Image 1 (cartoon, one colour):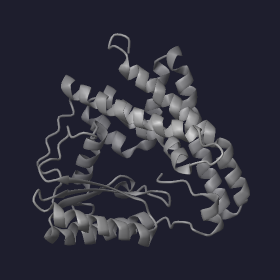
Image 2 (image 1 turned 120 degrees about the vertical axis):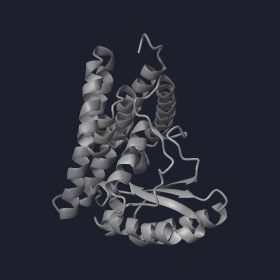
Image 3 (image 1 turned 90 degrees about the vertical axis):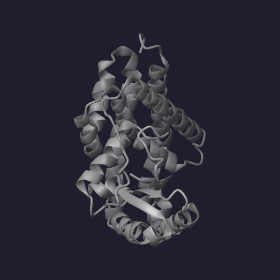
Image 4 (image 1 turned 180 degrees about the horizontal axis):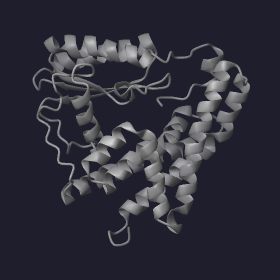
Length: 300
């Protein structure tokens, strides 16, 4: 889920095509990864929903690049140009990650076990369709996380939670002018946060592979984990459920308005009516998880 379509976009017929993320990804593969080799792009990989074949009209495109350590001046401008052109031409948000060759490791800041396992699985499954010149050729990842690795993951997730709380807190102050990008982030939280929390409390390889490709499983397992914490987690569990149900209802509303079953005004009214509650619920879930991770080990 890359974004929420605004009522204005729907009224103006500015509706992305469901195949657009795949066309944009193939454009990037051809012009930034394959042709980019002569500019210093060492390797590249399309990952996320496009690589998994689950992208829809609201999906973005996720791309990983590595570039020669002495070729940043040619590689990075090319990547930027291709990304901008693909985003405009296909009307798709694109999220890119670029690392100097030799610096990409599982302990790199911002890489949690879910993402590490997901990249490894994409490289294994799609070596010719979405992965080129092996971005992970020097990758060494031990999913049986040591205590040091687990502490690193905890730090990454705490940083993630703090950032999300800032986003949702700011969104809650904008009831008069809803920021639907923040609402979208709230609706996708059960899956995105769920992967990270489960990565911290699970260490087996099968978990990482499964969490990479089964979003509904990840969401349900996260809910099961929250429920297992008992009474202290009950408010967060209620908020978590609210986000799950709101996400499902948004998908229904979008389908209905695009098919003409409801008016654009009704669609916009649902967004406005549910904006604050979604931001508030996401803030509450993040706040609970952060408090849990910050607690002394014997209390957590």
